[in-house]
Length: 137
Image 1: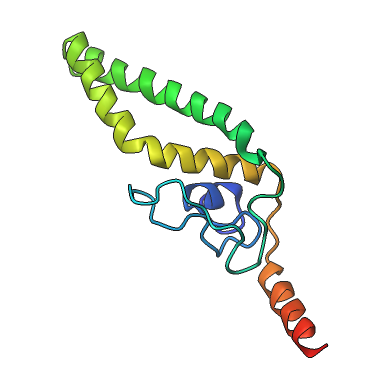
Image 2: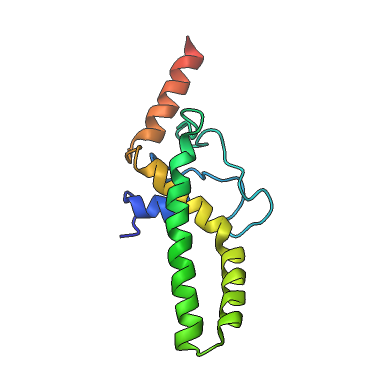
């Protein structure tokens, strides 16, 4: 399921949806420095990560769904399973969301772009070949 070539590989490893090699974000998954900065293009296959203005608008809805589930499951776990009081459960929820917000933002964007871009195992070779041809002539 999380093998190269699957959508889930690209999403959870934050890789380019076309080549599954290039990074989509400038920093690591849990970095809070430049958390939301993306590369303009894939460094490996040259896929344009911003095909049109407002492209990632739909990923906000995916992020909303993720945050709703994380919130619901966290509070249920803290309040029902660990038997913590409601105020403490909600305080811990704020901590969980604060820590995971960047990752949820990123996987939401990757889920969105993966809906529109297919994996191409030969994308890097094609890009390199095209780059060599354009240098020649």
